[in-house]
Length: 205
Length: 296
Image 1: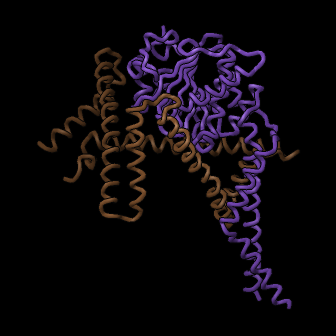
Image 2: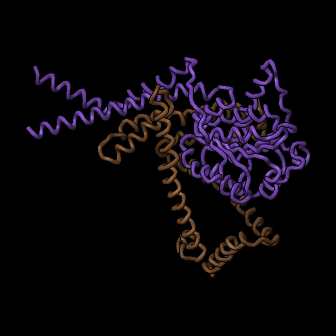
Image 3: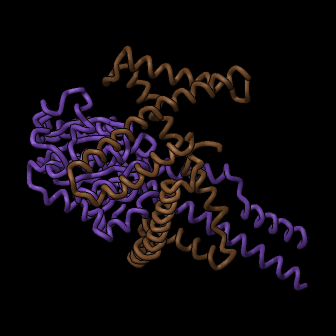
């Protein structure tokens, strides 16, 4: 019974959610909305679980003095600092909570993203070598796409046309193939879960 | 002497084949930072996918309701914030009613940053357009958890996901929200997205299920994935990265941040291309030398 009941719930829920899409009745709509509410509730609990997990891992590292344990102090300080400031001083513009958001969080995130430019440049220099036919195609594509931003005089028009063709024909074909693959894979996995073939979500047997 | 010179030459090619990454970093830093001091703007044509977004807003009559979903955080600000500012400029210039929301927690705050800037601009302009009023011309619903489920619930009733706005005012007490029950009462949805949940989820749960009209602004990395949706008509148009933002500013005839940043981005791309070319010249020269050596 320990395994059968969860499997039965998944089977009924899965079949219902698939069928209700094609049933234009208020009754089916209501049950669907009820189920969807649960997704939000579970999502909110997941947030709490995430916080608890972060707290536990950080405290564990500090206790065992694992490598880089000092950073965990900063993590916990940031976590509780923001929660307490938000609760007691408010989250309106001009409050300490928002000042920390503007002057610490925003520059940190922007800096992290900006660092990508340096790593991308370094990686492009090392990776784009015309060793084989395929790598040559990759190299030429990258150069054409990058140069579309730059005025190249009489060549600009041609470069724009080629770049546009790359984006709208081969790129689109590949993206569409990947999307269809993911979709079919998703359906197959969902069917395996609903039919009880895939049971890893229930933990170890 | 010749042998020594050859050895030096060989070392030079070898060095060019594996340039220290710190040297690349210095060049990139200079390529990005220096152009920011020059007020040069690049001329570029407005691509059809960007023009479509512009046309979608331009064709709306005054008073139409536009929902803008801010699904990004400060990490994507350089690319998406200029787009947000342009969308606001365009909407307020056309006297459209703007409803702001976010599927990312930081999204609605990004909207406030853009609004502050736009309001300052409006106040400074000589022929000032009236500064939009909160609750009448625009409203910020804030963030709500639930990702794509939020999109789905709003299709039935906005109040199910947003019983109140970001300030806690019930939607029923906000003049702008009177008569807005679900997507049937929205004329256009604009999505600024940097990942999940974002444009893809808006297409899957908003466009496919509720047949809303959707246009998007995406990061450059994400934009190529959206072209299939534009081709099928699920997306009206898409602004891709800083270039998309710059093209939109040009379409709006109001060059701003994105246009000025494009020069910097273009120079950085030239530097990357130069490094790639140098790397390949060194690679082929060394390979040729090795082949000749083996033949001897």
